[in-house]
Length: 291
Length: 163
Image (cartoon, rainbow over all chains, first blue to last red; front, side, top):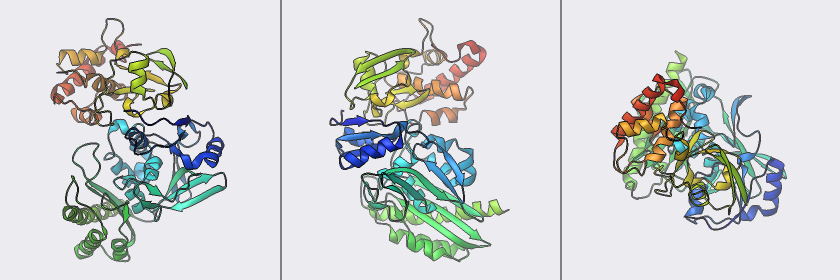
């Protein structure tokens, strides 16, 4: 299969890339690893006139701990997350989840930021970033802006990133106290998209929840943030009843559809089950850290 | 667009459209037909080659993305008539039935053995989890990789195969 013909540019500096996008952004697609975009081009679901390959831009491959957060550059691949000892300590949710993303060969090329910007409602990173309350750093010729992940996803494959912008990094805030996380994904085989996946991140203050993040994959038009469930947990001790109520709320916030992977009712119930399991696992891990 | 890369240690270049995939460049422009096209949708791994030592699915990489990179295909494993350990492993342990997935399987597992010379069965299964053998000959593929690992550890000079 061949994509429809396109022009191709692989700029060697960010300035050059931003210049190209300022001129031809409306007709262009930005590509990092290409693991999601190239299949779309081959199936001709996307037919941009210009492909801007940012794969050769310098300085975007770092995982950096900075003031209160970790910054992940736009060219950090899934495999880099897999091998990062620093992320295993600082953001264990990412390192747990990465093994569930695509397959080892795709993880050798695909990037975290590229995947978030691709905004596939069945993507894993989007819901993980929603649970973590991450922020994207976007650059254009006009300057830089920081975009909170909540609100970034507008619809399937649609975000608030503008045509003249490149997302250069994603920032993940670090918890200040005891924290725990978990990722649960139901998939039919390695490399399949999720039937349902749930990301959970909690931060404790003593026995009570200070902050909770819950992200849902494959159960809506975008990756979803289960806000009602998150709010129901704030300030509470994670008893079985509190966990069950949050799980029920998350399920009612999800909007799955019937498809080949399962019925909507089944997926909703899997959200409930995974939120319940996820919160229990995250709580156990947060307590482990403290002990 | 002119594209230049090193393929199995030799610099190769050609004029290609940006939309040409690396697998098509290797097979059509360079006549290296050892790399197979299976699903053509990033699922099966038959097209696996190594780019700068890392296995990737070449049906989902543009030839122009490989500009300046070091590519290794199944044709680069043997040295003349001497098979690389991974090839000896597949041969002696019957790691192939129809053979269609074999080039991809060997490119993945030879890269695995570079990083991890003594993998467990589980680590091998994880490594090949993006490669499908439709004959379902996975048991022997795992045995073949273990055999290759043993060959390499007995004869360190064999490590790395061709080049």
